[in-house]
Image (tube, rainbow, N blue to C red):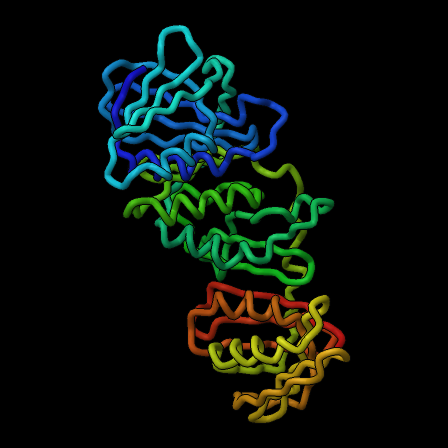
Length: 374
């Protein structure tokens, strides 16, 4: 194998694929990236056996071939090369080595046989549909903060993606919950998504997919293929294949309250800033803030035996009876970050029941938050 490639193109592709590679692995070949040069392209692949990313970049290929090189070392070398540099990669005969040349720099890297590299087979994927990059970004960004990190409830360690109907309109819905809060967002179902079964996309896959969408190089469309055990997403020259979480997502509709009749509307930016300021006082463990709501007024407060108290008042829209309710300030701020409209709407029942939060300007997203005792 012998080829020349631009540093910027190689660095971008390497940054995508190397992030899949685990720093500590008991299988040496999984620390490497598979490199395959053919027909004016260099294909880079990395896997952790649950997730695989393949990205192709244009290169001047003098002789075709393939090898595997240490992913993080190669990435660090290319990252430290000069901007605008040309990078030459060459494997020599039967030796398990790859030589990297750029300007006056030469690196010789120990390689492992490409034949030993595991490749994830996609298997049967009967459902195919396309989403715009914006739609996929919306589904991920508005739910990922609520993904559980508790390994024992592994079926909550991802985003539940499924097709359903809202007022007889077919939609694709993304849901995440950690038991304290729930995020649900939906988009109009694209063609081909109608019959798809509910799948749980793992947290790591969600984060890698989000990176690919962000750096998709202007690509506006994401091709999604779904099977019972795997998902495949293609964006431009990059493709990601991942196993799905094998578990049953809970019936989330049961935790969304229906009789919350106390409606509070508060300017989102002002509210978030007030909560952020007041929570400086609250203890690191509980992060609790209290909302005391009366007609036309909201008092946000926090109390800590060590630090003292903090109080801030806001003008709001509220016509129901007075109510005092406590929340985890971090959870409140995570939700207000997703609100694009001017106002955030709280639908409450009492101090001990789940509260619904909505964006006044967007009916497609809904958040549920459990209150705290304060």
